[in-house]
View 1 (spheres, rainbow, N blue to C red):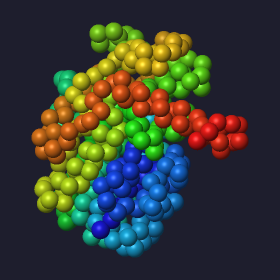
View 2: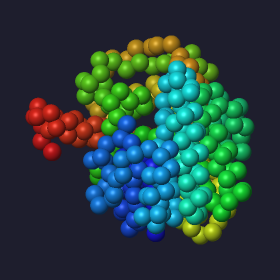
View 3: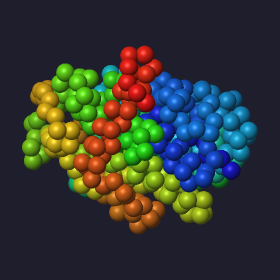
View 4: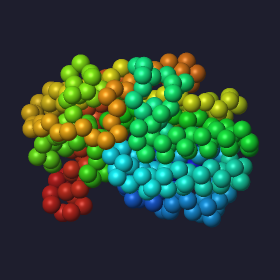
Length: 337
């Protein structure tokens, strides 16, 4: 049987494909390459360029590749962008997901793993936040994901489809073997932006708000290494194939770091100082959000390997240097592979 990975040429999806390949699983990738890269897909894994909303195409993929499980990453992920373009986010994250879920149901796919987000919690009252905490998003991005969660739960009750919803906290880092990493230009992830600033690709790093009710006034987040996140998906797939019931799981380490702490760590790991400026708050940013990750560990048996901020930064920095070489080679401006 085969796993269909939507968005498998993107940041997290490409790590998932590497994880599946490493464990001997067959996979097929569906990606429209709007933010992904064909070279990021593990060698030997088929890549179909197209959209998850194309039900004719998705049906053909499921049937031709004997797909028994879907891992759904494809979607838009930038919170401030969702505030500026809410209808685009509801289309890409919610409407398109509905089409994919329908294809899965109609073609007998029994297992569905959904890439959700801690943004569904909004600005939680208690930290760390548990999976049964109130889901009250404060951005269209969070609402678009929560709506898809609701559709998936309803579909699982009505049809022979079981699911695991994984709510990501802040994903960072890169594959330790340097096969993939965060490669999207103009990315907004803090650690990505910081290592680009270290390498002189940005003139400065903006801190969006230092007046939050946190120890140093900057936002606090739970940073999870992308490879540990991919492994959580593998554990979720094994969980579903065992016949276990549908489940919602937080994916984080259970402790947070402030924006200023992350910046200090990047400077220390890189051995480079860089310019930091304080800017106003961004719409849709909660002050603090940290996962209660006990369910992932107890139910899935998930054991993270890279729960160390300095290690996450080291891997992100190594990938950024690798990516710089790749782009230089592609443009003929020098560098070596």
